Length: 567
Image 1 (cartoon, helix red, strand yellow):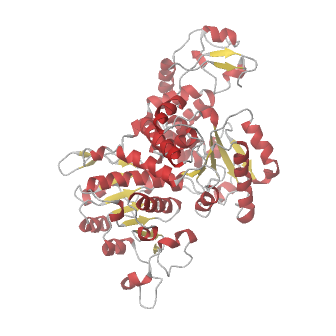
Image 2: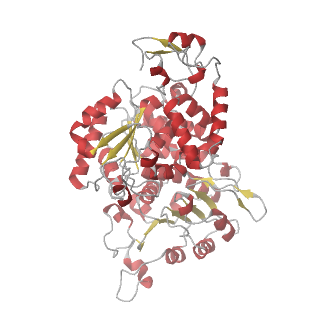
Image 3: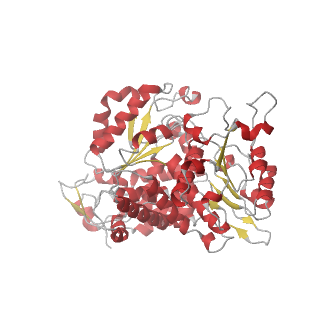
């Protein structure tokens, strides 16, 4: 299929500085004449392949990952097609540069690396002009996706104040196929409690402690209602919201708009897919598992609820019974009835004190019940880490788990890699190659006892959330329902290499992420149509071809000058 002809109203310097339309040296002779570019570009006309080779050579001259990240950010500011085309050709190599783990360093240094604004910045002291600012940023656009963040809980590095959520939006286009011109990254700047930022004279955000309570809720609600009012069929993505707000905001809005929280639902969905692949190897059911969640923040709770809901949906287990399959552990130990100040959203998973009397000191029901205690008592089949407690899965913990089941399922998911609960190589060695492993960041293969490489699955949200989002967008779903997410997760699990070879990786290779996410999107859209959530009048058998037609791809189309065209 040939790229469409675009009618563009920009000429000269204006089109060269608009990354959506800029082709650089790839403008044809006819386009150079029509758009007043003949004297503004060198003579040679390059193909996109040639431009990608030049850009890749330039990228290799950067000696650090953060330098490569900055180079690619600069390229994105100049030419979208070249940026995305380069990434597509070197996906496995460059995803860790533009996303986890390098993006965490880029965000931590955002104010010092800042060169050019992108997206939409909505700041609390300017809240009275929010609608005016919102409409100015979206004027003339047909927006399918808003990626919003208040930057309170970023990538294991915490409160970063005004860190923009652009990397997430990039992944939606790169892997999910959403047109970048129809996506807007939004920063909700409500201040920061990061003292280093507050004391940094170069900090670009609002230098004020974080707004909380009703003022915060009203500010977020004003933004959400603008999205609902002006772009009712868009997907609203919540990213890196703090533990006190993430689940609460998701629950508040998910019945009235298509909203999605990747830290909760995306992490939960990709973990569900990985676990379903693992139990495909062990020939068991979800409801047969005994699952420890080590780290009860937004990600840990999101995983717990996603797995619990899947048990209810797939295995027809009552929710209350499914809740009993989980043991949640936070920094104070196992979450039990007597633990003080248990968050409201954790209470359905609280364990009874009477089950753990032998671990509590005489007269002290608040004694900490440690991970090893729980492993030895319940003999878990699955242990999932979202704690950012490096080394939390000790050799003693892993060996105790291996004694209690034939194929221990161990997912140390914390990011970045320096915060992982256990190096997968060690977990593999300590279980004598019996463990089924997945991590949140890329790791090299581990050696099996027979000398064969065991590929460590990367339980990366980017294997599923772009497809979940694209599926919701193309079906114009009024909600992102649990059943849509489960449908996408089951499709991803069905593509696991381990289902063909039990000693292979639990998830597909990340280099196949675009095609994998397309399959996820098709499953999501099919489910939306089946359950009546979709806003399109399609038949299920039409979804695949309709989805193909809506995929955005980084290729140059033909431009025609039209003063009434796009800008």
